[in-house]
Length: 212
Length: 276
Length: 123
Image 1 (tube, rainbow over the protein chains, first blue to last red):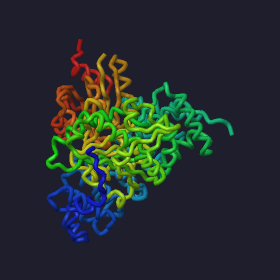
Image 2 (image 1 turned 90 degrees about the horizontal axis):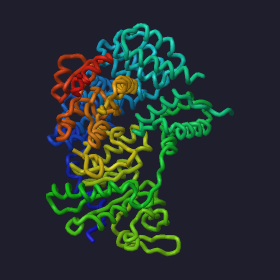
Image 3 (image 1 turned 120 degrees about the horizontal axis):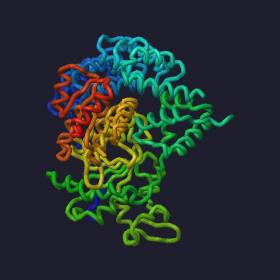
């Protein structure tokens, strides 16, 4: 039989740490962020993922990084490191021309409710309607008690139909009786828009059925 | 306590949430099944009604309740040749693609996680011996890990009930198992073919020695993890794999709920995911 | 009966499109993002794809690029439906392989007439 069972562990420890050969100190890892090899860059990011001092360099790398697996690692590291530099580095990706980067930023921001809480309101008031839409997307999985309140304020105040539509979609899942007046008002405001009417009716029906 | 009820609107909200989280879709024919389990969980958690329960489910930081609910909604049993189409895919397509691109004669490495009581890694070994001619030419290393040391001991012993082996063809059963009393003992050759180890896949120091893997079987595990742990587990797999290596997930699992790092590949027997 | 895959992460958008298209006699399946859409399309190709842009895991551009690489899917029509109305977004959509780029919110008659056009169903 050609099955082998020698200890993978022992071989690997020697054999497969070659991309970790550089000095794993702070300076070595930071230098490694500019390596030509994406695997080396990814490992450097992963080894820096618990080092707050690395935030500025990680943010800088994010803006030029072309490899998706390295970008994913940077975004995840920054979101979980937290703090102003890291989070604003991730939030800036919401303004990117690159859809994949925007969507990955949304996903990691969903994972860190405590970091995001303090900036949700300013993002919901951003001048760019796309940023406001992405902020509503962040609310989708954000485990936070204010989610419904934020959504209601969006459909009450936001002038942009697609921002309201995104918030209404989420209310169809999480909305309670509190949201009923705002949903009815939204339907009046966009009475000519079939999608808003469809989505509002569906949401109202669900809420009312749940109350009975 | 009065029995909680699930309205049509509640069902739809739950259905969409559960679909988004897990990829499992319940249509109306499953309404009774779903309602019944939701009511069981509402009662078990003393949440009184659907609204309160659903809020808890969505906003609970640990994700424990969602995991419990996934458990109720799925059947997680393990037996030889379970989800056999993926083993067929392995021998009919994946291994040939891997060997075609190999530049040296190092072993092909397959990692089955979680090992559970061993049915999956042993099924892989049997499949290779029975249905893959390349086994004469290539060395294969089958590794299998679980977080639970007791179950690993059980896997290493290799003793199974009639139920575990019921899907095995007679010929294979008599070739690789000794039948005595109520149990089926797997033969020593197969026991020696799989290297078992205790690994917590969420612990980077546990997994850092797993490198250059060609194929990972990780079936019916990630579906029980929350979003963040799932993504982290997939990233760990990514780092453990060779470029162009493959990941096989369970039939009710999809990478669409887990990670964007892998490409979707279609083969005649199955959909699998490939590291670019 | 022609079969359409609606790809959008918003549940109410999927329902809205489904409603319009089923009423007009089409069969509709749904996917929540680009990866799920690829999984479905690779198993059983559809006659038309209606694709959102911003979605988790794999966005609409990424889906179309991967989709167009598949030999048997490269000719199937796809409509991008998105909140982004910029000229650059439109150009990206066409470059990724969309046959048509529509801006949300979309009216039922609009969706239907373009669907019929791309499927050659104009009587």
